[in-house]
Amino acid sequence: MQKPIPALFMRGGTSRGPFFLESDLPSDPAARDRVLLSVMGSPDRRQIDGLGGAHPLTSKVGIVRPGTVPGVDLEFLFAQLQPDRDTVDTTANCGNMLAAVVPFALERGLIQAQGDETTARVLTRNTGMQCDITVLTPMTPEGRRVSYEGDARIDGVPGRSAPITINFLDTAGSVCAGLLPTGQVRDRVRVEPPAGAGFDAFEIEVTCIDNGMPLVLFRAGDMGCTGRETPAELNADEALKARIEALRLLTGKLMGLGDVSARNYPKMTLVSEPSEGGAISTRCFIPHVCHEAIGVLAAVTVGTACVLEGSVPHDLARLPAGAVKTVSIEHPSGEFTVELALDPQDPQKVERAALLRTARLIMRGEAMVPASVWSQAR
Image (tube, rainbow, N blue to C red):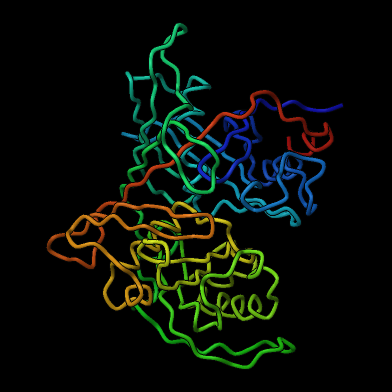
């Protein structure tokens, strides 16, 4: 016997996964996580017995409920699973999956369309961050429906879709204690290798920052890279990954995150001078696999670091003038544009971050889990 769970399988930005109403899942977090692992087919690197796509970007789950605090329409809990692990991480956000929250809510009747455009305020329960998300809801013969077709294009996703705009209201210190969790815009750290690591101790300059996603940014050249390598080339470099992981464990403690060995953050980001007309070039690890593109909140955080004088990427970035800056983040699949508004009285402070994403409903139906898993969950 199997237990059916209503679900919509959706793409949000450059990620995808099943979305659930919170009320359709077990209320106990541990029981819920056992169900999600079964739904996705983890742990198994191919996730052959579930809906996972054998990659961190396609091993994600969205859980949505109506707003429970004043002024909030929807509340979103993001869950990051890994293909080959039995972990379910709900501590960090995912800005890509966030793009599918309002379409999901409209499809499931949690909110109603307001006109040709519908804006909803969404609280991300992972970190308490709020944002306003706007989707197109044109009139159809069946009434107003969320539109997935349009002319918007984002790198990392084929074709064009209806635009979804996300205006982040307060992203600084989403997981860490503040925007610059070490208290410095730039730190020089010494990394000691663990026993048998196969590399020598090294010193490196980093910028540790959290404007929606905890990141550690460092020059690609300081790791012996050009910053133009493909994700496949970086993923095949075991020596490089060992050094990056040692740096991640050290900086995680410096950022007040404690032991991050089992965490999906901080993300480790190699930066270099742009080569395709953007502001900065990136290669982002999430945290052990090089991203084919870059996450939404990682892009916001990289863009923020670029505009902070004294940061590691600021030395490399090519930025426009003015208090409102359009920052193009180059990544392996193209570019990601972030609009940042700076405080006129304090140019080291970002007041607002806005960006464009797309989403699509891929399938609706029921996710099936073995009855034994559900009975254990209940």
